[in-house]
Image (cartoon, rainbow, N blue to C red):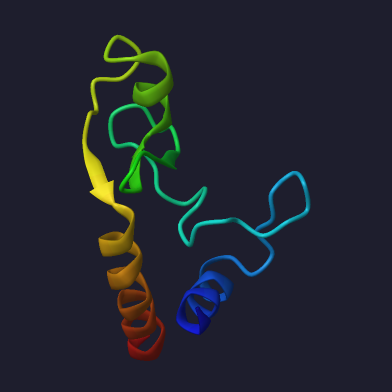
Length: 88
């Protein structure tokens, strides 16, 4: 929606994938795993942000099995960004 696009342009206005398209999800490439530093990726139904290394390599690659519901994270993010920019 409009709020997601506005938030995305504030976060990183030039962020594009290797294909030249804009990221599919608001926080693509921005969320990092606190354990291994890998990007969080979206997977599953319902969609959740998860550590890419844990998801693809298992618990031996990264112990971080935390998941965050995509809708919940992306709903809260634009408000926080707006407060940070306006309050700055």
